[in-house]
Each structure stands twice: as structure tokens, then as C-alpha cells.
Image 1: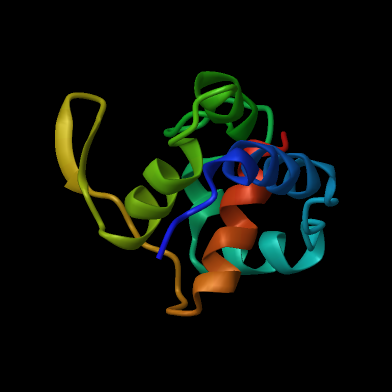
Image 2: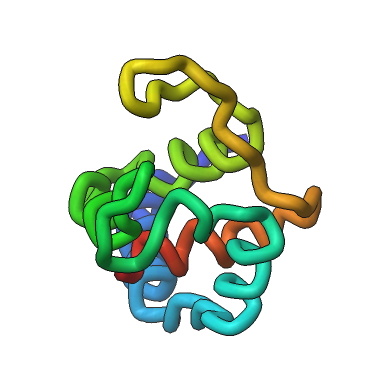
Length: 113
């Protein structure tokens, strides 16, 4: 069986163009904020003010334009990594959900700041 390669590149380009033109799933801001509050994120973080942790605007700026930003934040918010606060190492809390869509929504909300 012969593969017709002359269609492969145009087909791939069409798929990329179609995917890029699809609207991104909108962030459910209320749900993201509610889960962040339930998970005690707002104890150490805020959208724009510095607390014990960086503001979400700073986090969004740090990851802006980075292809792996979403995955890095998902990992950070679901694995309870060790972090340093005022020179003391402690465990970062995780989101109080196992629902991947809810986690992704919070991450997208943070990155949209």
C-alpha cells in the first residue's frame, strides 16, 4: 500500500489552522475562585498583592508565553511540593479536588491574571 505524501503537509497545516481558530474554553472565574478559597490558596496568595506567596499576576507574568506553563502549575498544585517561605521549607498545599477539569480551570484562571 502506497501512502500519498502530497496531502500530508496541507492536511497537517489545515488541522493546525482549524485548532488555532477554535475558541479556548472560557475560564469559570467563580468556580476557580471558590476552589482556591476552599483549598486555602488565598491565605498565602492574592490576585495582585504580595502575601507569603507571590500574587497570581506575578505567576501569570512568570509563565507568559511558556508552552509548559499550564502543566507546571498543574503539577505544582496537585503534588504538594516543598517550598521555602521566609527561609523555612514547608509543604505547599494542593487543590482540594481530584477533578482534572477543576484543576485546569484554576490554573487557567491564574494564568489569565
